Amino acid sequence: MKQERMNNGYIFRYAAILVVIVAALLSLAAVVLAPYQQRNKDNEKRKNILRAAGLADLGDNNVQQLFDKHCTRMLLLDAKGNVVDETGKAFETDMKAELYNKGQGLPYHLPLFIVEHNGHSISVVPLQGNGLWGAIWGYIAIADDGKTVTGATFDHASETPGLGGEIATDEFQRQFAGKHIMKDNAFVSVTVQKGGITSLPETDRQYAVDAISGGSITSKGVDDMIRNVLGCYLPYFQQQRKE
Image (tube, rainbow, N blue to C red; front, side, top):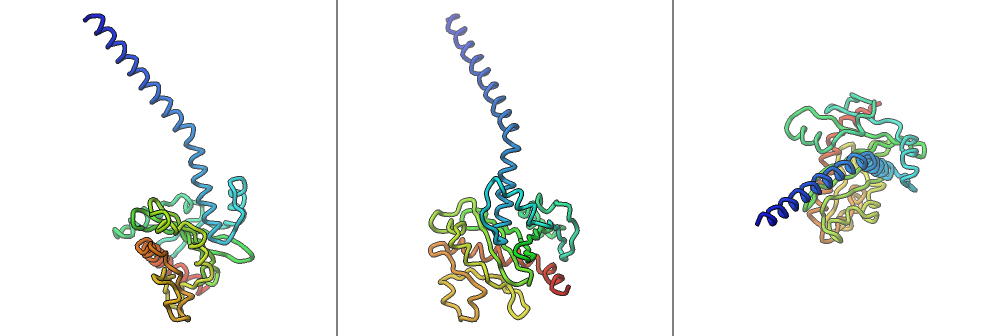
């Protein structure tokens, strides 16, 4: 019996030491890898901003250089569309948190990225919303006329592959280029049209894209996300048109 207790004690001590060692190694790995993970996350963000603005051929090796070259201003706006910061805080701003503050009636700020491409100043707006199963997000780029979409990118946390998950495909995203968000100087956004844009009068098709077949709730989420977020930026775009 005494020998058995000694064996059990040895096993428990050995297991405890292993747990401590493994925990220490995992903590060390997390600390060591954190900068690389953050760099990858930041580069993915840079890629999506530039892709929305129409730039292609973006790789991990050149995205930082291209972003520094083409993204000439990173603005932080207040609720009235005034620029309150240009020091780069916009890149670190959590859009989800800012929209939550807005919904709670608290002060909030809006990040905006100005990308110079082919002689034009393109405004890239971060998007945040909800799909069927979880969060959806992306970027939409507005040309310097303040009304024409130059491109858009979308992604999701848990939408159904082959259905709502199609928002992350090039086929869905390509539809947005050339669409208009203003009609007769009034904001109309870009509708994600259930049944397709052919169900609309021809004069209204420039303000809509085809919804995803079988992904109506996610499509509605994209529609709401674009409309709600772009609506927050209207004061800024109105100021720009006056200038």
